[in-house]
Image (cartoon, helix red, strand yellow):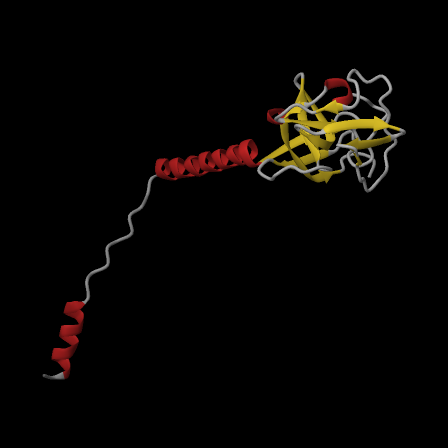
Length: 183
């Protein structure tokens, strides 16, 4: 075999490259809108089943959450006592702190809260009264409900007025607060 024979063999083994197919503008437009549609679907699923975005329109959870703050919630985690949550009552978005769960007895006396006879530990002590409450204490929280109190305890638009809040109305635990006013 000569040098020329090996060069001919190498060139005959190579396959010719196909020219790159050019796509039309309609193809690129369809691909663009498909990507936009997938992104919108992903964001919708995320905000429907995993997280939520809410704006506080009152001072019920002052000082943690102020009027106008943007709050991000997480829906998949297990709730526990002391969690700040977002819930709906009569179509209105409300913010409050979980004090007790279904089956537990809540008592309010001498400016403190007790659950099943034990005083509730809070990082910040909020003087709490049962004055003007629509329910009587001790109050046993119904099953599949939570007892929620505002951090701004002189505002009694919480479980002292509504009673137990159904777990289905709880929209998630507040995990992030973005200050939009008073920075």
